Length: 293
Ligand SMILES: Cc1cc2nc3c(=O)[nH]c(=O)nc-3n(C[C@H](O)[C@H](O)[C@H](O)COP(=O)(O)OP(=O)(O)OC[C@H]3O[C@@H](n4cnc5c(N)ncnc54)[C@H](O)[C@@H]3O)c2cc1C
Image (cartoon, rainbow, N blue to C red; front, side, top):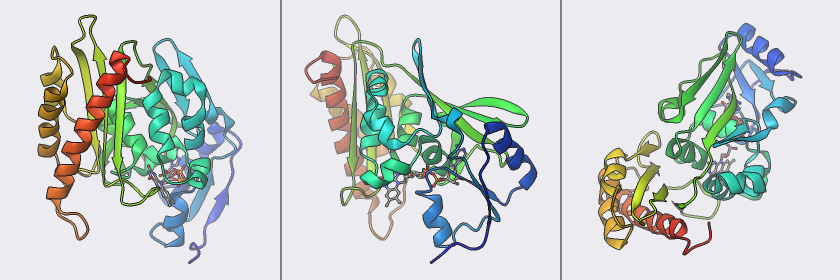
């Protein structure tokens, strides 16, 4: 199928794009990598009257490390997230997550801003944004604001973005020393969206106990979630197998998805527990220097 008729706009600056968003009303879509919007328009699930192609907005392609934060422009492609040494050094779990998205061709076009705005509950980049408390910077003609990732995702394919807003950049914390990460994704075939995904970071104290744990689940409900009770329960504990097992029970209990025709909820719970155990074990090994960071 082909998309319904629309008017195509290709602004040269962010200011022009925001001007178009402000004047064209609510029947408009931004086009970044087109890897979600393209199929949705072809299937006529989305039928915008106007499409604003933002691929000429080179201001949205920058990557900057400022002290303990790394800021990534919304038009940075998944392939660059996966392969840029500066991103890998500052935020290795982001690179690993991006490298696991879809197929090579999709990673060449898909962008971080597009993935966050699309807000698929099983997508990798929203999971990492929630895990790391990323700040999502959005702009409009009225100015800019930064939304905490945990507040940004409202429901499946629904975000906090207003109709006249554009994501301009995403800010992640730089990984501290003595910290490690793990990401585990289960999909039926390579390149498919995950059924369940789990991401974790562990920071160890000088004494070798858990100073902080971050744990996030994707594909277990309508948005990616953090597990604050599990994160708290791990603090001060030795990061051993018993702890991973204990924390995995929190993950199974946190699954809110219903049974669907393909995946019974009991299976999703089992996946959440198993993947959590693996992600935590890997994060702890990396923090201890047993595995490469
Ligand atoms: C076959 C296939 C397999 C895939 N597998 C995976 C997978 O395993 N994991 C995964 O995470 N993703 C997967 N994807 C989706 C892929 O990551 C998309 O690239 C991503 O979801 C959307 O990014 P995009 O840049 O292509 O956005 P687009 O498709 O251009 O846009 C998506 C939505 O975001 C809006 N938007 C885009 N940029 C902005 C912005 N800067 N500010 C505000 N709104 C914006 C658009 O208006 C649109 O509503 C897959 C896609 C395909 C086609």
